[in-house]
Length: 502
Ligand SMILES: Cc1cc2nc3c(=O)[nH]c(=O)nc-3n(C[C@H](O)[C@H](O)[C@H](O)COP(=O)(O)OP(=O)(O)OC[C@H]3O[C@@H](n4cnc5c(N)ncnc54)[C@H](O)[C@@H]3O)c2cc1C
Ligand SMILES: Nc1c(O)cccc1C(=O)O
Image (tube, rainbow, N blue to C red; front, top):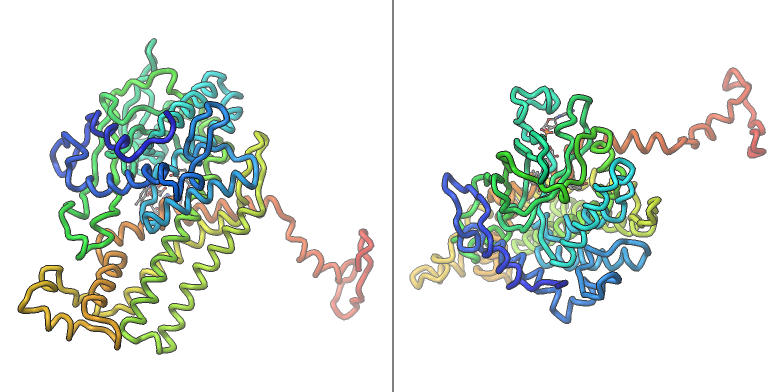
């Protein structure tokens, strides 16, 4: 089949009835549910872009194996050209959503492509797991499906491992084997966009300890598999807010959900890993599923940061405050943050790593640096928006006020910005900014940037430890070589090193 259109994606959603719980009731038709409607349409637009002549060659390619046109997320990366094709895709999708949707279909489809490219990792433990991953990749690619994922255990008692929790099946684990497959029970978080996806893939960040064998699992199933319950968090929109009043919040809210598995059957051909702590701990660091998605999130994060920065610049300009040094200083800082991420991405794309499988991956050090910096840079951009917008962010009237005949004159006069910025222009700009920096929607976007890639503190500690392992920090030796063989600084003269260097 190859690339789907938006209408085909929506038809797929309409053909199923997953068990979705929202505000105390069961959702019977996800497409007709107001809170999901607009996000569905935004995702549908991304599917349509695959057929749009403006984008088609940038974001899709002809699959070598099938001869069909498929999305670039399914392209195993073997060369710089492949990497560029991937980047074009990330950029096109991120620009279409202003970087505000983190879990667009490309994200998990590249995870899957990496698992496919590095299936040899699984083969070492079980040949069938590797075969299962490969056929699942082909199935998702050829049907152009949209996945959600849940790789974190619910936040119950973080000081204990899965098998030490109060109930054996609080965290998702295997209950028993049957001839048809594995029965699994328990919960996982935090499946973004789960209600509007086709399938769910389950795996985990490393951290399993001996005794956690039943939780060491990876598999994928259709989102409407019997026994799988999707428990949505409280939505931040009712789905009926005006696009004028909430130009971003009304369109781009990604729902998040806890997934509860009530004795769900996972067919054997969908089991990718089971009952093996070592394999489960190696899956994330050793199959490229950390590094390739970091490229996608780096590009998306750049667009999001750039967007917030542009809003801040336009906001400041609209009320004439960017003549002040402090405001210029803050805006200059944001622009430098954007340029820093842009430069890191370029470096990552040029300084590639090549895995034993031949898969080419953007450089680990610059990508991890982006992962470490964005959780600080994005919240700072939001803070700057709040500081520059100040009380003006709290004076925006509504769409209805703007068009009311009795108020129209006041609106244009008292809400105008500096010369040349009309009342309606200024109000629209401030509403855009408020969605990002004031609304619950904007707070979620901030929380996403802090945590989507895991706990930033532990991530940075892992980065430090790996970096230290791979490097000798030899500049220090070079500096200290001046003391070689000498006891005191007073007696020092440069000495010849073994290498012959001074
Ligand atoms: C908006 C949003 C969307 C998300 N979407 C998805 C998704 O689609 N799929 C998915 O699988 N996940 C998703 N996540 C989850 C994300 O992966 C986690 O939030 C992230 O891994 C951090 O884990 P946690 O939230 O459980 O925090 P915790 O690990 O519980 O951490 C809470 C606090 O305790 C500290 N802490 C906890 N344990 C330790 C420890 N061992 N050592 C030191 N400090 C510790 C942390 O530093 C942190 O401050 C999403 C998260 C957000 C916010
Ligand atoms: N955050 C991630 C995720 O949810 C799945 C795969 C990779 C990541 C990541 O940021 O490394």
